[in-house]
Image (cartoon, rainbow, N blue to C red):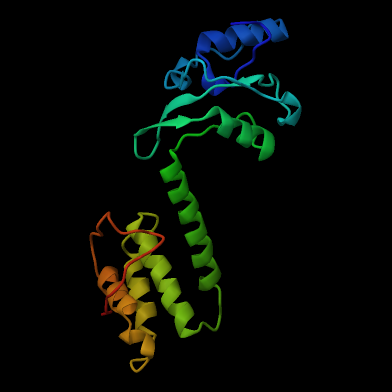
Length: 207
């Protein structure tokens, strides 16, 4: 590799990283063998684009080029590509540190972001002292979805049912299909994986 080319650590092999470190800093590599951390990365030939080190966060070894990378998603285990243009966006526009890496495919990243938003909404509603019926329903819905996503344990279904039972018997909300569906889901011990966490379909009753 050309001495003036400095690639991101997730793009290189252990041997290349050691050679680059020793060439730039003029001293021996001190960290031992970490080839297991680089064995899963494959850069795709002829996909390199220039990087702008001045826009990157400060690093011992700034990056001069990005390559498209073949990756395997940590969650779903499917193959995906971490594109060079996306890396430039991460490290030069969003300000992510060069120590960060992409370990999930786009779909799983969106799911993670959705979970984070859902948890934030759950926490917000949980701490509302005087909840409206709609807020009670939404809190129960967040709770059920988070159980279905294995973020919460199935014990939280009991809390969701308690919330749903707080809604007045003569409330219009109890007549909705969404309410009936949520009751059904809150009674489930095993939840179908096909549920869409960000757009739950609807109809259940409580017990």
